[in-house]
Length: 120
Image 1 (cartoon, rainbow, N blue to C red):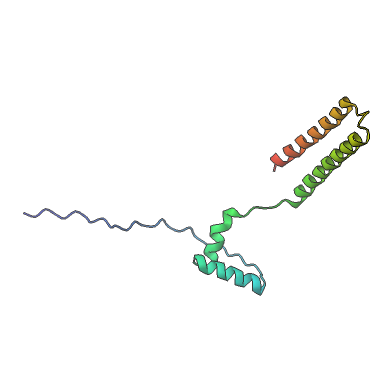
Image 2 (image 1 turned 180 degrees about the vertical axis):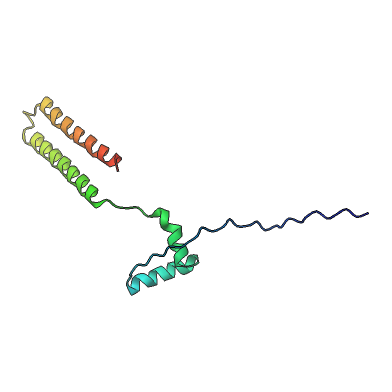
């Protein structure tokens, strides 16, 4: 007597369902930009796949924050230059305590810049 055959499992696994893609993004590009995108897209299976694959790698630049950080760093640099000039000019009269006070100010400013960068 033959036993009923067990269902044969397929060696192929089913793909998870694709998310619905009902939105379209349109961007105007130059001929050169389009050619570069088309070339890179052809290498990975199309421009849409290229853009989807790299979506998480895009970082947003906060230009106002960058300008503020640059301004703070420029002030720190100016302070360091003033301290260096003062110490080099007044080598014999350089008061170590006064220099330490200036360096502590610079250190506080660096701490402010680092704290501002952490908030981003």
